[in-house]
Amino acid sequence: MPLVPASGDPVLQIKDVDLVRDRRLLLEQVSLRVQPGEHWALLGPNGAGKSTLLSILGAYRHPTRGTAEILGQLLGRVDVHRLRGLIGQVNPHHPVQSQSRTVHQVVLTGATGTTEPVPRWTPTPAELDRAAELMALMGLERLRDARWANLSHGERGRTLIARALMPSPRLLLLDEPATGLDVAARERLLESIDGLRERHPDMASILVTHHLEELPASTGHAMLLRAGRVLASGAVDDVLTTENVSACFDHPIAIHRRAGRWTATAGRVPQRPAEG
Ligand SMILES: Nc1ncnc2c1ncn2[C@@H]1O[C@H](COP(=O)(O)OP(=O)(O)OP(=O)(O)O)[C@@H](O)[C@H]1O
Image (cartoon, rainbow, N blue to C red):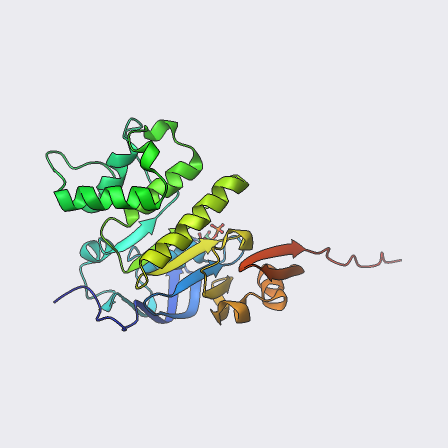
């Protein structure tokens, strides 16, 4: 059976998902439906369950209750290794063992779905062309032969996105891709993400972050998670409101959108008058 959904079918559909670990309910009644070409932001405070949810969407964990259909395949009834190979996953803790690997070599490991180059594996001309195209898309041409050890955070981030795109995934999962970047590197990364979404109009993506400033302008949908539950989910302008974000982070936060991008300004929590 082909592992790729017919065009127009949801890329992701999870319904009433609970996840229990060590007798703790980490996710509760989470539902999400993502169509091709949709770009979602997943936001919430520390410990809200964002990475846990992303691990289900990436076929690394199974729900305890509820159903998760990824690329049309029901988790629990599919070979997860094969499924993972069809999902582009960008993890900031991607373990590159040999620090002398070049950008080009790391990008090519996306074709084999491994962290290290597979011994005696040779890329096809089509895979070499694809790697070159993706490195150009992510602004990495000059860095083709640069060593992993010498790359900046931003350069590593762009390399890992190019790597994740090697198998032309229908779904891209980005876990805090802008963490640790200075403002210029962040802006370059977000521009690259906007550009790749334009070039791959059928690809869907989910980007996890704590910071609204780190959302690309092409974000169309958002989910707010709080204590493992969905606080709001849907079209981005309906979800990322001052009221919802303040409730999610349990703090007054004013949200503004300008030129497609978001800013969040934290207010002061009113002090209670001293008793006595
Ligand atoms: N294997 C596990 N067993 C028990 N608890 C876990 C496990 N994995 C995660 N947790 C707990 O689940 C909760 C959600 O964790 P998760 O990493 O998904 O949150 P997050 O929203 O990604 O947080 P952060 O923004 O800090 O990265 C946390 O309280 C965490 O301690």
